[in-house]
Length: 119
Figure 1: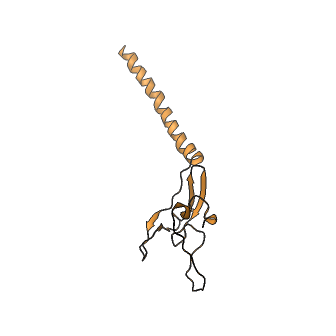
Figure 2: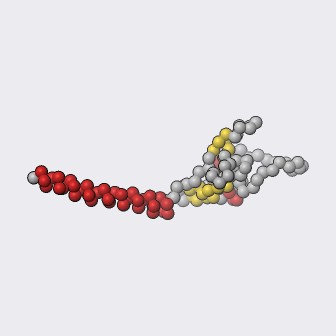
Figure 3: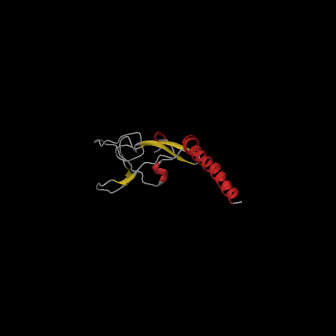
């Protein structure tokens, strides 16, 4: 009787462990890489300047470009050297043009649309 019980648990162990490993590998390499990939998120930081504004950190090659995913939203972002989600670099020029600053929340941030389609 003891031999049958130990044999039963040995068989259960030999069936469940390899099945669990195969399941974990399936989710890691198939589901989470091809079907449900994780969202790239730009790194936020307080750039110490005279204004102490929370912007995205521009770290070339790491956090400057990526794809933001949330539900069915899939949008490419591009963080410029000033820390904003934009394809343009902002260069201070002396001109007579009036410039307008837009301040806001996630609608102004524009991560849910491609960088070339945002404000």
